[in-house]
Length: 330
Image (tube, rainbow, N blue to C red; front, side, top):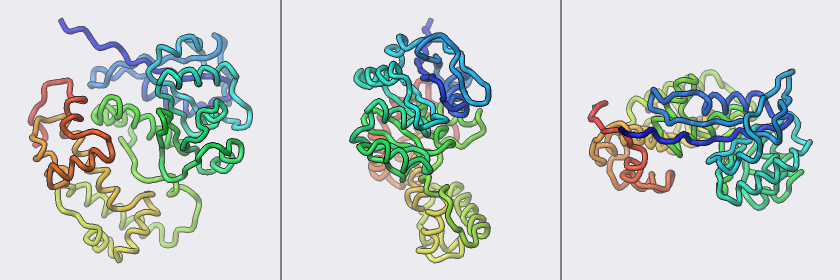
């Protein structure tokens, strides 16, 4: 009889002032049992300095079930954002984060959680993200941090940080995808009724004038829907621009304003996601996976996998296929 795989151990780091929303996101992604739908088992623990309830905004509190002594067992440590980005986290928490990083444990901070990693000195000389409205404050308080603004989440030396509130969901799903495959992340996303992944940067959410926004948004939404339905075809930016009734230059500008990325990168992101699903769900030959996902050739698909995922399609299939493959979805 095959023994079930051990649960992946996840730590939600709790201390006074953490944001309820981020706690809820972490709990929804890793705290629900979805093993009946093929998602690996997770052991999510609420880790704090002591056993006392951790106060949060709105009269809520979080009951820890482990102390900091449990952190060496965690494979992933998640740091929620804060309601107050000025008050430092407790020194035992900061010291525990420094020890965890030295051990090589993956640490991920949601939104303003980057301030906590910065307080621990972990972001000195490293790239990091936070909510766009807090970026200047993070840079001013921690001048040695290389504050970025062109992504929804980012990694540097096994330290993950994310942009604004909803980007915390993107980061959590990406961490599931990275460790357990695209299908596991998609299953979690479906249960949360959210997109498995979003492309672009948080620049698209910064307040700025958008003339003809409704008209342009409708045209771009139709073009994106068309592209997703025809990913296996040789789509060009010029053809997509013509479909939107715009010049290629105007189309690229409006597309970047709406999505935070270029049309070409958007296409590649979705083609990679399609290829990941086919590699996980089917035993189709890799050249056929490349054709169906729109890369045209195995060589091109391998180049994009190497650039984006630091692995090859065949290695990805081996890593994320645990069940017998089928030829479904033909």
